[in-house]
Length: 368
Image 1: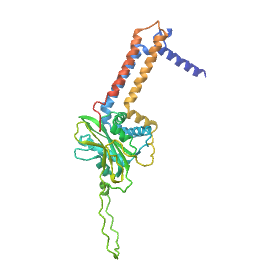
Image 2: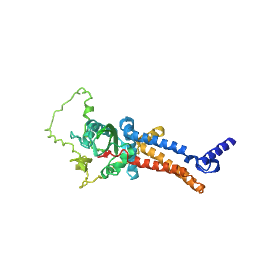
Image 3: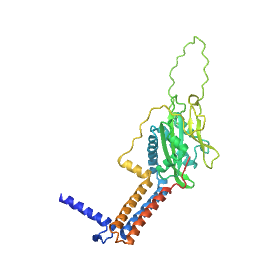
């Protein structure tokens, strides 16, 4: 018991020496002394350099960060939906594969658009993986340094926000790919939305079908017809996706697609090119399960390093603001200008770093 009291008294004494001006520290709180200010200044320079280097150089080149960003974007998309009382989206492996194929294609062929230079539309990627849909949509982003910036950019765009909050969608798939954009290494982000078609699957995964060996033909018994065979009805081709929302992309002469509806003859489609569609009657889907422990911490650190860095600076601002106020008012008649200047310097520098971090990494970022 006595040892615990001694530790508590020692801690109080240390805090008093660092924050409270008194005769024991010569009325100069340790936290505001030049040596401490120099140390904190050095730590801030190192932290800011690490953030800038990581955001502009490491993140676009390390695959791990791209994978973590995709996982974080699913969580952030569902958080936005739940906040607007919409059902969370289920992760679809087929949509993830479609998103990965699209991201890889953009990175390999150095373009950034919903429709590729070769004329491949978003819906072709759905068809490739065998995802038959009644509703589908796509959001794209490139050259962002963390997932929160991507989510914010999408939510600030009416068309992309409409996709994220679209009640007609029940599933999601997000993938990233490393490539170059405007001559700089960057991560391409593809977010695919969909609602599986209730009708029989119209799209066939031809790549998968080609790997299946032909089974031996079974014996067939042909009955003797007693009546003339009816003339077979012509087979109607599957309806092509109908685009019901689009937007022009700056610098492009073509319309870039956002939302499509398949099977329009059985759906009620808005007459105007709106950025939302009729709500589907699909049952509510569960939220994506959150990761815990070390994985959650790693995801938070990697997906939004700016928030981590800014939280550190905000902590320093609060710490030195409290220390400066205590130093000024407790011994208001005994002031040391050097201490005041040191505290204000740290507060101003930390504020400038926060301001800088809010804009760094967004100069060449884009969404479509």
